[in-house]
Length: 263
Image (cartoon, rainbow, N blue to C red; front, side, top):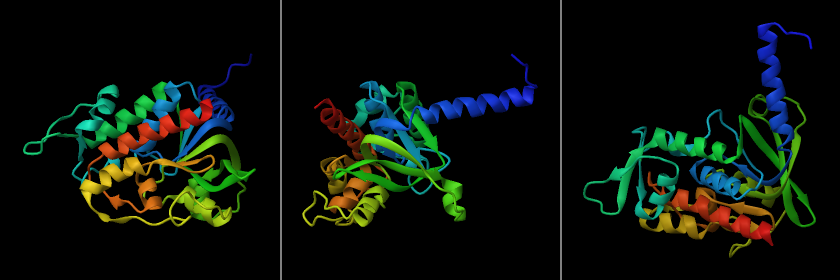
């Protein structure tokens, strides 16, 4: 075999390894859009269950709104019911003085810990990738239409690629972009009281946390939602920098998807 100059060997390794990773992810059990905390927990749980799962994240860095904490004070709070998910990921946390049942933690540690654990479990993460459409066949959502984020933002006329998936999870947060696409382009009716997206309500922490978990579900065959995306669809209340509901939502959506695929 011809020996390449060092510069070419490095370039070749990047092209070959990324191409292999992408080729292996063109047909998935689960495609997750958005790399926020709920999506990262879901990806880890799904990968640990032996499913083929990948996250497609529009931004350069996965982690969603975790990194900035509360108003760029990079600390977040998690309630007791979600401590086990922090412990599983090896993320440190300590009690909040004067608020029983709540712990505070470093938001950068949380974001990086969730990313690391998802990848180590076997999930793939594709950053700087935008989803511009969904695959809709046989009255079910069956995958994604993807392109590079710079292509999208520059308005370049570049055709996308497709990813086929048995299940799609919308983890795009407040805008619920994938469900919006499905409603608009496939003209589907969701499993909501109105058949459409109800819209997120104002902040109410005590209600927002449990509603995030409650609203995590399958809204159309093959299409699931987690995190704040689920609250927007079902009309739940907004939360503050408390992330337990987000983590538990990721755990719940993984269980729902596993149950569906095992059937």
